[in-house]
Each structure stands twice: as C-alpha cells, then as structure tokens.
Image (cartoon, rainbow, N blue to C red; front, top):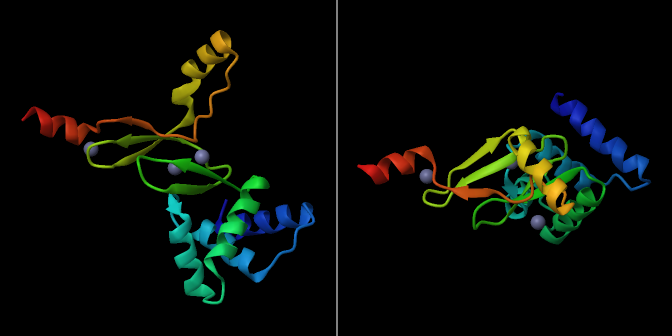
Length: 146
Ligand SMILES: [Zn+2]
Ligand SMILES: [Zn+2]
Ligand SMILES: [Zn+2]
C-alpha cells in the first residue's frame, strides 16, 4: 500500500466513525504514513509542527489517543524509552538489546508456538506487539566474548 492509499484509509476510518477530519488530524496521519515507525509522541509532535506550527502538543496527544481507539495506530514499548507508535496493519514483534539499545523488528509468526502454549495452558491471549523481548544482540554478544 502506498502512502496516499494509507492516508485515504485513515480519513475513511475517521469518516466511518463519524469523526471530524481536521487539519491537525490530517497532519498527524501524514506524519504517521510518511515517517519511519517507532516515533514517540514527542517526535510525532515535532514532525507535525514542521508542517503545522499552530498544532499544539496536547492536540497531537489527543489525536493519537483517538487514532488508537479507532485502531488506526497501535503503540509499543521498546526498551526503557518512551512509547512508540505504529500504523495498525504493520504489526510485528520487537527484540531490544539491553546493552546497546538496538531494536530489531521480527515477524509475529515467531510467537506462534508460545502463543498457542499460553492459550492452551492459561487461556491467555498473547499480544505479540505491545512489549519488546529484551536480550543481547549478536554484536554485543560477540564483543563481550573478546
Ligand atoms: Zn515496531
Ligand atoms: Zn502500552
Ligand atoms: Zn546490542
């Protein structure tokens, strides 16, 4: 899907939920569509304000909450840093290195086995995306051995 289509999708989700499509919402949507993922709310605010200096941080935060409630975006926690945002539909798992902070995106299928086991044993539905798996990356492991 290209970014124009994604932007159209967001606008039609808003319209479908009878929400107003404001200039600020369009600016947030544009940033989400055109920027790399893993932006914090602060980074999204900065990018929005480059286009629309009149949009306040609290407006951006409210819009992100609204977008989450409409499942346009999801958030994740990677490492000790701030919450980051993803467009829904691009959901994946995260590995984060506790030594250097590297974040690696992994396909959600890596959790299939664990997910099935947890459901069977505990009736618990795993959220593959929300929290990152912590560990050491290959480079840090190699460095610690030399
Ligand atoms: Zn991610
Ligand atoms: Zn959370
Ligand atoms: Zn590392």
